[in-house]
Structures are given as C-alpha cells and as structure tokens.
Amino acid sequence: MEEDVLTTLKILIIGESGVGKSSLLLRFTEDSFNPDQSLTIGVDFKTKKLSIDGNTVRLAIWDTAGQERFRTLTPSYYRDAQGAILVYDVTSQATFSKLETWLSELDTYSTKSNIVKMVVGNKIDKAGREISREEGMKFARRHATLFIESSAKTKDGVQCAFEELVQKIIQTPGLWESTNGGKTFQVSDGPAEPSSCGGWQCTI
Figure 1 (cartoon, rainbow, N blue to C red):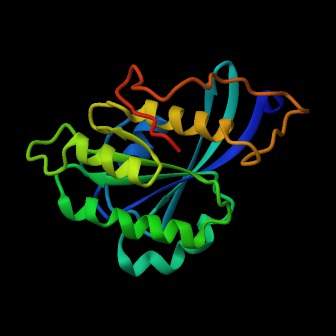
Figure 2: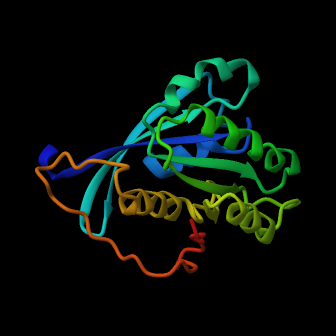
C-alpha cells in the first residue's frame, strides 16, 4: 500500500548511446532482456519499488538518450535527482573515455551537490573487453563514486547496482526525506568492501 513506501527517489541512467542503459533499466524493472532493444528517443521513464533492509522505497528511474541530438532535452531531468548511474560498455574504450564528459554534465545540471553517483561497466558477457575491472575501479575511486560491473543479458550485477545505490542515498544525510510519517531507515554503515554480488563501494 502507499503508506508502506518510505520515500520516492529519483534515479538517472546516463552514458553514451548503445552502452545498454535501456537494457539495464528493463532488466531491473521487468526482469527481461531484448537483444534488439531500440535506442532511446529523448527520455524513458519507469518506476519500481525496492525493499532495502525491510523498508520499501519507490524508484523513479529516468533513462536518458545518449545521442548528441537529444542532449538539449535532458538538463531538466537532472533536477532533484538523488542518484545517477553512469554506464559504459566494457568492450568500448570510447564509451569509457566519455564518462568524464557525463560526470561534468551531471555536476553542471544536478541540483543536489551530494547526489550519489555509481559507475557501471556493462556488457561483461561480451567478448573483446577493452576496459579491465581494475581500470573501472580506478576511475570510480578517482571520482569518489560507487562501482560495479554488470550484464543486462545475464542479470549479473544489475539488482546489486540499484540496491547499493539506494542504500548509499539513504545513508546520505539531507539527500532525501521520508514521506511516511517520520519512519526511519536503518542500514549498516560498515567499511566499504566487495559485496556478495560483485560490486565495490568506493570511498566517498
């Protein structure tokens, strides 16, 4: 029921065209995968409830198009977002190199200075890897973001990515507000370490 939802969080998925943003969203929200997924036109939007440590939050997830011609549509969608997932393709050096640009855009348009960021190296099921896990982790540490590798095709890391992002948002004071009568959210706050599903939480 509505009163069981602790809060609604706005999450962005950004990155270059073709890195699998829409596939990650579809896998997470509907547990399906379409190998012929078409490119996003402008912005796509889906919602999903997620249970973290016995509390339910609603995620409003915005999937933004990576093509340059749609970039003028996206700035308004950065507003009030509490979390952002920056996706690259581990088989494409070009998409990894563009993460700096996406981070800069996020910093420019985000209205929350403490927005939680996660870098996701997608398509680990594919042959021809160009970006090692170590390179991805090094980038994430340098920019103080969370990090995980994933495959929308095989499910690897997808659920974990969203769970870790939400958990970090909830742990960040002032980034969100409860919509459920003062109910509190308790999560562990131990040292950062590899999770059981292969994600790494980097020091922020």
